Image: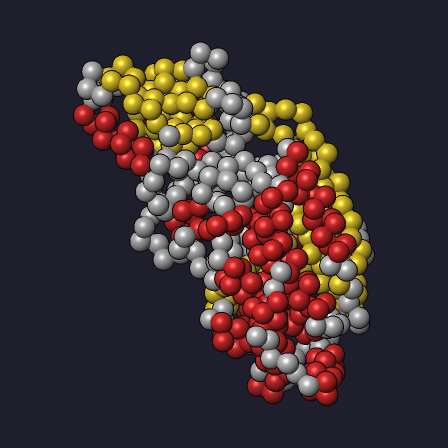
Length: 471
């Protein structure tokens, strides 16, 4: 239960917080330690989030009105409207939709793959899904021999030996990586560029091992790319369990073939929007602390962790600050971006508008790592900027979210880097994220309410302190 502060104590807390902020880059606290009022504030925000938090309830609403919110889809449009109405209901200021023209790729109704023409195995269905942006196979499908590889470079070395074949990329995420995002970064080039490398050598399609840390029968989709001067060939993800099986089957019967059938397609671009709302700064309204997440999600599962959790982190952080009657010195702005998953058009549109807005975006913090237990923040920028933000680590120690380290912010806020905006990211426990990421497994039952609310509280604390102290 949230501790009930007596009226005079609450007044004292609010007064001390209002005067704690100072000019950008200036620090007045002894030994560079936060004012004690910030510790009281942090504890109060955490109490409020745990006792009266709305993050999980908002996530329930979002996945109900806009599950599978891929850019250009009716579900994405419903999510934009939900976000706009929710920001209005929360009492945020300057709530508006920022128009964005987004791509519209649709999966289609047919996704089928199977081992065929194998004297040893006969016909064995494989669990697959089209990669985002893939072209379709011919209506009758593609049937071809398979060559297994573990890198893009291996495809280049094989050269015309892959001609007429399906290239099967089977490099798993490295399980020894302590941070699973590093394991993902070390394997995702197969998914992103695999079709281009294979097509250059004459391959007819690609299968890519799912970017997942778990061994199961659920394929994980994600973005892939083509190049204008390279033939476009179909690309699909195969579940990790079936990737293991196909690898063993190829060793036992190298002459087996795989049949692949997809009818995905790209439709004309669609008008959509970023959704923006803020708490206007009381002293420096022209200076902005931005909290960002993306509204769109892949068309598998509900997008509960990726990035529904990030969206409600942003909304709940703003709600918590308003609920306590806090008056941030600088504007705290929430931006829910459209089209992070397959284009970043919302990110670029926002950065373009920010360039000529007359506002100074001091810091942008992105939440796009799921709704798990918060662990801290990553910070880009100079050593001095990192040191200034690290001095606030103690504010998060009671919930174990006090690890503030050098690192990137996130895809949606990255275009703001050219404007000199410090990039930050909310870091959460990453162990389970890629079990669910971009798959049918990403549903709200995988999100723990307490962990989600603590993430929102962490974002609220950091945003408010930055609004008062600057950088």
